[in-house]
Amino acid sequence: MVLQCLAPMLGGFQPHHPARDVKYHMKITMIGTGYVGLVSGACFADFGHDVVCVDKDAGKIAAIESGRMPIYEPGLDQLVGSNAAAGRLTFTTDVAAGVKGADAIFIAVGTPSRRGDGHADLSYVYAAAREIVEALDAPAVIVTKSTVPVGTGDEVERIARELRPDLDIQVVSNPEFLREGAAIGDFKRPDRVVVGTTGSERAIAVMSQIYRPLSLNQAPLMFTGRRTAELIKYAANAFLATKITFINEMADLCEAVGAQVQDVARGIGLDNRIGSKFLHAGPGYGGSCFPKDTLALVKTGQDYDTPVRIVETVVQVNDLRKRAMGRKIVKALGGDARGRTVALLGLTFKPNTDDMRDAPSIAIVQALEDAGAKVVAYDPEGMAVAAPMMPGVTMVGDAYEAAQGADALVLVTEWDIFRALDLKRLAASMAQKVLVDLRNIYPAAEAAEAGFALTRVGSQVA
Image (cartoon, rainbow, N blue to C red):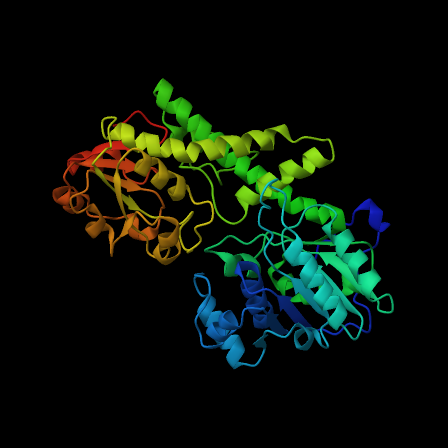
């Protein structure tokens, strides 16, 4: 069953029945082949739609067509390959060719934090909108998939009306809720699909048909006003970032009073009003979404003279926490890291991705190098991306090579490969047996049996 939650501004439409001129099989154009664009395009093709992915980077397009993905996402290479072979998924650098005959054109370009003021940089979105509109030769629905501040759809609509007043171009907001490392599963089995419109029956019909395959999974298709949809994405990410930051502050309090943060998290997470997700204490959040989206929400609140004080604090606390983890490692070394070797296991902001954007490891490395330490590191997928960001770090081939001769071993990212390491083998090769577990993976008894002095997050065990 498809759930339709229509905002009052839509005039209380009844559950929609597709217009007669909307077909079940859709032609979709995806502008951008990053995490969102490539995953979304491949998944839409897997639903049976015809999808053209457009990117200005000819080298990236050539690499994808040859089977080399520009990002690491489990299962993405097989998904792209099978749908390309079936003829449902094609790639081009030509926007005009890509949008020809399209029922819907999705904008999935980057919206990084703008230098100087922290606002979302919408230059790529607006540039894409202009190129799309200028290339259109028939009515179409333009869908903003990128994460954008409230009111962006209004500006895209203004651009469309200014450039092509002769065409019926509808602008829709359809924010993504994909987790890196689990993006394909999230797309095919979503908690919800949010679609924001200004009430256009045609836009609602097109979006309903695009997502019709998900009705088999009983995925709620939620229609709202366009501005509401834009805000939902920011509000969701800010709330999750707040949960992470809250449990990290509780971890610090646990260390001070002698409590155990994992038990605190479980105790509150069993309350179904709170839930257990995003209550894992660690070195702070990073990645492509939470840092820039919380900052953008803060800036939006300031612009509308309605400051979001809680989110402002979340941003500040998270930024400070990352470098604090570097000081935690120095403390585990007795307060002096000069001339010591610290081995980091994991560099990416989370497992199952090669994404290094705002990863806690960046601030940790900087703090350790400032303290005079030498840093070596191993990450299963992220070292090629991380190396230019950390020119002083020695990248090695596995966890055991990283530990060789090190004074401290630090678990930063909880890749599965790090969950069952031979601690005795690691300890035997190290100059000092210091283990700093920033993800609370290893029990104190197991670390002690291997001879490690253990430091955890949210616990006084050492």
